[in-house]
Length: 83
Image (cartoon, rainbow, N blue to C red):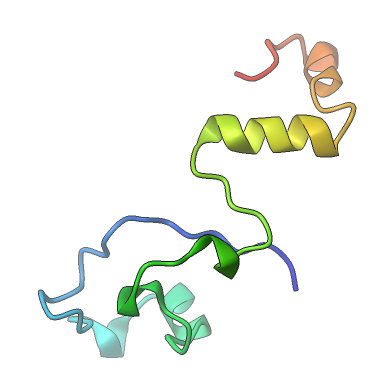
């Protein structure tokens, strides 16, 4: 049902035990998603994703393969591809 982004940064509002310290004032993004399938309970495995890009280079390689004209979009704008 679309793309999801896993950001491996610890929220600054989490207590040491993982509880939300600002639960009643939490941001909308936290309200919109449940923790039913939360990476906090354990690391995500490669079988949890249809596509997984561990770094920028892996994502760029996927885009170049998936979208054959990926680098051509830079030519019109006069930018360097991959930058």
